Image (tube, helix red, strand yellow):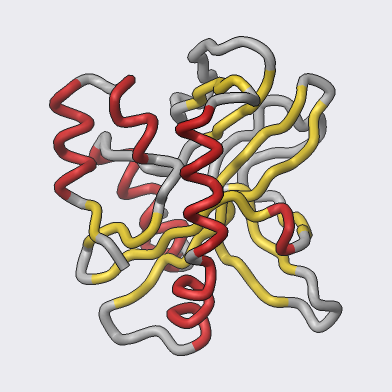
Length: 174
């Protein structure tokens, strides 16, 4: 089945199978907890978390790097994904989107790479539209390394050491 999926979703499936999933859901709200029914990592982060807010700011500042690769990818670059903020009753849910597209209206679309937790009626794979101001992170693969993923970095300290080390080894700076 995985062989029929588009490239970005193949990578999501591969990440889930290898246990080195960088796709996940980041929710921002009043209290931290960890839970996931679909086994995707879900991490609640306080709205005032300075380290995560700094990571989001770095990701937004470097968004031109993402768009440059998206518009003219090198043969070694694929799997362009964006993490997007969606308002919820509890605050906001930041979730990775695959199959990102620029729309003629000036907005964007993508498909949920994970099962949303606090977005009633939304499922993994659903197509959604969003504005550039809603983007909280970006990443793509270059030579099998993760480029971008600023919001992943603050979460490494909460992961088991072996998992965090494996993920660090797969990350590269743009």
